[in-house]
Image (cartoon, one colour):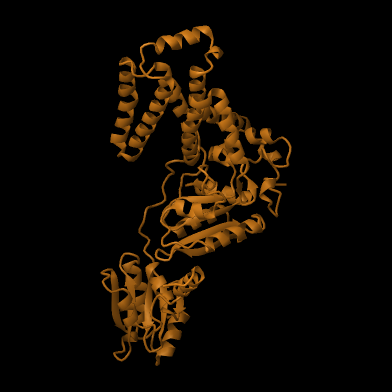
Length: 505
């Protein structure tokens, strides 16, 4: 059909820019577009109760508030005294746009595409057939989940509200924290079918302009049918989409989101999703919690060191145990070695199979408890952890030391603030165990070198993923683990290249 690939792409580009809907804007065109849509509602009203002036109002039931349509649109349109000055259709249109209707927002529309977009986003449309023009009113329904407490990121001293599924509510929650016109909210429609609203938020003169422009370019280049999950957006905007390590920070807390904007980062809010995305980020940002800023700097530093220790234990403990048990028994003290040998004396499986089997069992129990309803999930987790584990030890299927190692590694992984980072550590845990089976501690060391090489080669919008360990500033490890008092933390992170570098005087 196509002579070459270039002709195919030219044809596809031409089809992509063809008008999706009829060019003529009238009531019949809208009825044809929304045919077989039972939620598509229409009502003919007399403009100013004049029988010779009949206009049609359209809306999608469920997306709009019926009370607002009746009180703010239909009621003023049928007010004879209010609409008396209008004699022609052109005068009627001008009267509606100049305040004849009570609705707070009124937009003149000349194309069918704009009208359809307004209808599908909770608008009410008034069509003037004789003029081939329309006016859309914002009467979006406010029904939805109310602002509630965060479920994942709890804080004792922080705010108690979280993002919801409505974009405009989320932007208002952020503006309550950052009451400045410097907070810019730039919206974009993504998805050929879903037309999902995505808002990019940043502080002017604080966020790096090149970061803002680069993110805007990547969002404009995203060409998909529907944006219904964050993973679709993440793979399109991050620098290394094939890496298992997270490169966009998720948060459900507006106060934490606003703090990242104040630091010079850029945020994303997606209509229909109760979370905010923040970039650029480094690996160190996934080890921080919102409560650190509300605690004493000594307490925050101690907890940060504890989290990094738990990260290393969760990642390395099973692999080190397998390597020592298979290849380096001389590293264990004699009494501990005798205890391990005695515990494994009647176990028919090797240490490698024990640890791999327990790791897989641990993941199965975690998945079962996560996706089942809460009462059943908690019961399954408790039964699996206690009864199945104890029965396996009593039946001499696995040794107690293997259960202790796997359980302690899993508990250490639960201390990680980011679930995305925890998932990456779970995958890395399996890889390091396989490396320990193949080459012992040498295999573990080689695998860690590959992981470090991968992390050092990753960037997030021009910032190295391993900063502050890899930037050109001194005391990288100290800045990673320790937090200085707030009055001494006067400057923003130099890696962000913010125009306004000073945080406080």
